[in-house]
Amino acid sequence: MIEWRGGLNAFYRKRIVTASLQLAAKSCGVELELIAANKRLAPVAFARQLAMYLCHVVADMSLRDVALEFGRDRTTVSHACHAIEDRRECPIFDRQIEHLERHLHRTIGEMVNAGASSPVDVEKKGLRLAV
Image (cartoon, rainbow, N blue to C red; front, side, top):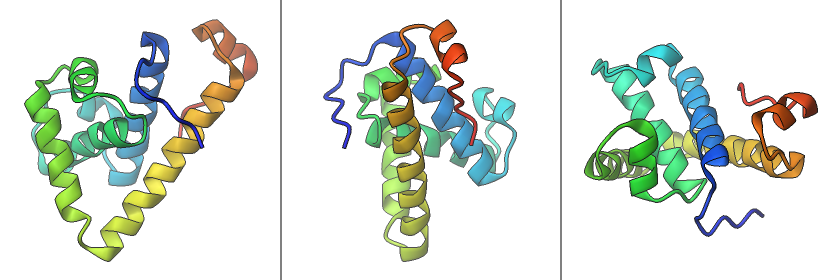
């Protein structure tokens, strides 16, 4: 099990955010570019909330760090995490989220095991973040 305890450097933080955005976009069936934009369509907003939640819960990123990476306010990230958590009372939704959490956790493990210290190292080692 990977124990983060915060303190992710900027390189890993950006890679984790990218991975969570890709995972959320694919799982919600929306375009990645729409999530990164300020679109407020329900499926897009939900995918963005999901990506924020995954960063906070799986990667143990602080609400402040997630907010900085997503260009949002800390309270917006808090709201997103609560919105996802509230929906987890549904057993089917909860299993889907568990699956996404495991997937992102594996992706983070691959990053750590690759020992990449720069984007060039990641390319050389063939690490891919796409879902």
